Image 1: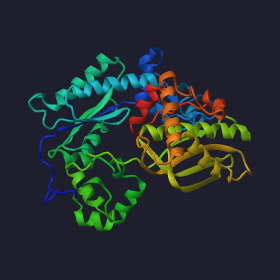
Image 2: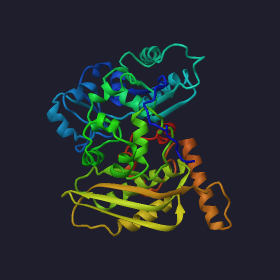
Image 3: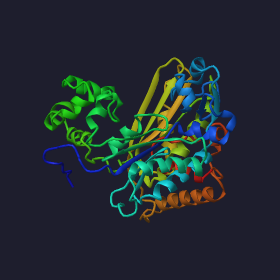
Image 4: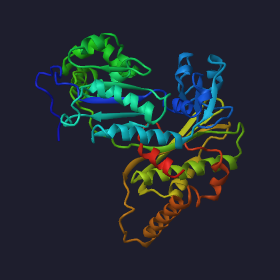
Length: 423
């Protein structure tokens, strides 16, 4: 069904009914909550502690010293000499995630978790239940988070007429802020921001806007719909932005999954062929597991390698029939892996499945060979679910099992549920 927009595209003057909650420096703060000796100290969280460790989450204290997510630990240590590095602990984050969801759903049944540490409460239709103002409820949620999870937990709360402005409000005063954006302060709020402060506007979209003479969020707000649709974004996205900035809801949907994959930075400086294939086997196995958990099958595989000298290589291939089993993903990735350049040491490898389609695992095929593969895969999944992940696994994956830790996903929470439930 095509989207409809307000005829005049005026600013939405309805009372704000959307609340965005963002846990501050989530993983690092959870670690500080669990270990009081870490509180108030610069802290980095990584998926595994090695010489090549990368900071996947930084505490508020570390961020104040310039430490950023994605920064190598060696570089972060130069900015913050007292930086402490700890490994991720998914069960802790899962516990906090469940607590947060429970608190949010106590105010409205319409709750959407955008990631492990971010969620949205839609208060439309809850007027008789929540007779207090959303600002009061926001402060109450902050108090409940501290009371029910821990005294060190903090969150930002943003309140607005739509999801976009609520997220914008939640980012205005970190950490532990609470802000409201509505028709009365929309212009004054946007006047204090840069284009790249807006979610969805990175350098490429900023350049597009600049090319059309738009250099600030206020100019963006005042730009006519036709200009945004025809000249800037050259699609209906321009109309979406026109409505989004004015407080009308256009983002209340879940985007389709486009790729499923895993990547890994090698733990050895000069990995042998045996080591490389063990890591590849493990990545393929966990990628296939993610595919099945999402109810998907794939038609294509992409293999990406980065080498010690900075060069990178990738290859992709589309196959005739969709696949979802561990053995299929490994077999197809191995075809590409065999074609790789071998002039230098591999530093990082990534496997992704794309061209995704709904899985047909629940359907009985006319071909007995397909049925056997499906039933075998289901049996392996059931055994692993009951007795622990990788109870049945490839022999080639065993050397990597203790080294390649499950990463904490920053996007969809569906795989996070799988990760934690299988721990």
